Image (cartoon, rainbow, N blue to C red):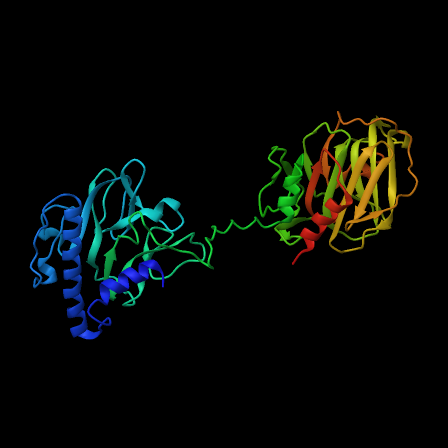
Length: 450
């Protein structure tokens, strides 16, 4: 039996077993009064004050003890109380302890200082009030609904309860319920300074750690500090919000269909009509190394421009990624060279196509890492693809001209060569670094997770 249980058992069963029923409750009240009478005398003598004689035949309602060693008070019947200054706002019927500043504070089962609980309050108090704490005796509240003859514990939030939470560091007994609406408070030795701590599973239990945040596709992207990140979750308006925190918002042009179901397990996406839909953005003056990442679901059979970081007319500049008529990923860089009226020439670019292809009308994850001129890594659904031989003779990168274009490419010859993307595009991100194959796989798995 726990030490607190032994003390309460002795106090409640000194005249035999704990009685029940109306007669039993009456007898129990008499024994409580006698127990408090003896305890008051003992405390008074211990403090050097004359013992106050209280008739042994007194009814509980006639017994009152104020501060230890003081004369009985009719205002605190059937109770031993002490006074203290409230160090915070304290509600009624709250367990309290005295802190290092000699102020009363709410005791909580997760607070190590709460091991020195003194008793409970009988009503609410404001910070700075001189409050009354019941350290021994019967406390009644019509709104309670206790299970009689069971212990009452300090709860994690400073409440009183008859159970111990798995998250509680300690199980601290305040008293025992003598009826559905009353508890017998006893603070010595179980609570005052010699508190009995009942441990869980035979050892002190540390509070459970907070659960780790859920790993999502978005959280993985943001953890790698993208330069820009278009989630494309908009359902209306003309702004494609940059979720990277860098404020590089894009602008919807044409009439793209917003709010389509997302291509990953989070959010929404945008649908381009292949005629004039696109997203435009500012020039970000990018450089090596660089990674372009997106999800798409598009038909195969025509050139599908997806991300062009520096779109210019009749020329190539910056970085570009598209899906060609065979479904191959085309990736390259441009030196800013143009051929007005005649279209861009191979001297303005250096590009290659993937050996593997993007499946038609299927949600697909594409990552292109630009390590340098003529040095690219392409992943389709987290699997790295070999590249066909590079073409074009550009040896330098120029990102000082043009502007960001998603879903539109004006690099080919003249106005008749402008191309637009048709289909669904989602989760476009650009990073100022490259990644391991494991990191690519991690994001892919997060995107397709149920």
